[in-house]
Length: 510
Ligand code: SF4
Ligand code: SF4
Image (tube, rainbow, N blue to C red; front, side, top):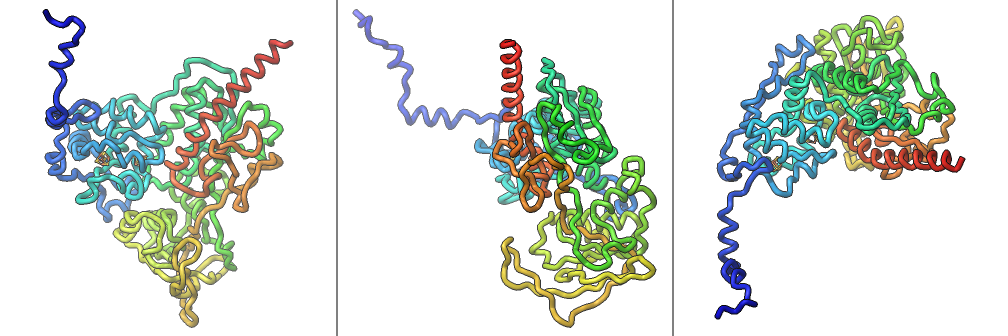
């Protein structure tokens, strides 16, 4: 008689641990889209590079330098991803894009699914894919990069965003399921402002964006030159938000054209006015004709008059010889714009060496290819005036001393090394400050640099007012601006919900 109480099936199915382990090893590992991963085979796939304009061609136009991927090469490049379970690339991405997840769809041609993965965590993947310093973020952490070129994550992300917009005829339009009737004011329409506008409108709130300039986009339109990002992407983003009902009020400066009394009629405010005030050097002669701040120079070089405030309209006169001072990506944007404006001799002054420069190596390489001369260990000490216009820059050579607070070696002038560079225009690209006029009498706490002080949820010292982006962190990346907007969003949504409940209770109580 069989023992009815014994579970014989358990004994039959149970395998010794060794056998279990062997079986598990034989199971092919799958991508997140269900494809088998043969890591050794994937490591043998050569990189598929994107093509770009030659330096000779590109200095004669303002179009983007890179042509970007098409579907076939993008799918091959995506196959180079070995689908690391820990995804260090995702961990290094400020918005946490699920990169292996997207590439798993891309490699099998499911482009819409791949694009959707990027859009889950980013409001503008086609812009981040173009503008992030990938070598310091996602691609810098890609394990393939240890022995070969990392997977071209940024360019694949840009390709997918572009492909997706082409199929849809623009960015996805937020479609709220409910209308809350609550009103949100957003100050500034750069990346952080646009991201908050999208999320708030998607949640069913009425959104008004106040923009001091005549068009939306902030740094995306007024800071980044056309050869890095075509402005039609920014136009499409703004059109999608406007189509969803977001109201844009242009040429409106908060703190000047609209005060905080009026602003307090909105249920919540998000400050995203950025950091766009070009720093000055403090030299005599900085007010001479043809001396420009980076902001003024870049907007006038890259935009039609119709998109500019009246004070900045008119021909931009740079002459034959342009000198730019600075060491970051903005200074590269300036020298490369000067080349495209037809300057024959463009010189960059930087007070340290290339090793201490903070911008992207790729930008410097592009500038050199386009004929820019770099004068390292050189700083301007005066401007030469002729008939009210700059005609030369007095410079001094520097040597490097001990490291300063930033860890970079401190530059010191070398006595007797003064010399002059003749020029027809001089551009100051030494960083940006946050404008303070926005704060008016709001009582919002700011630090010595005018940056808004917030907690980890983006809350300012004034209830109902949140902040994110460059006006909180100082001038930084587009993707870090998105990240700080994302950090504030959940708290802002909870705040609005609580406000709604409080009002409902007050009404019920009569
Ligand atoms: Fe890389 Fe930037 Fe894209 Fe993140 S957002 S995946 S860091 S390019
Ligand atoms: Fe793929 Fe590189 Fe990310 Fe690994 S680190 S999942 S190889 S992109």
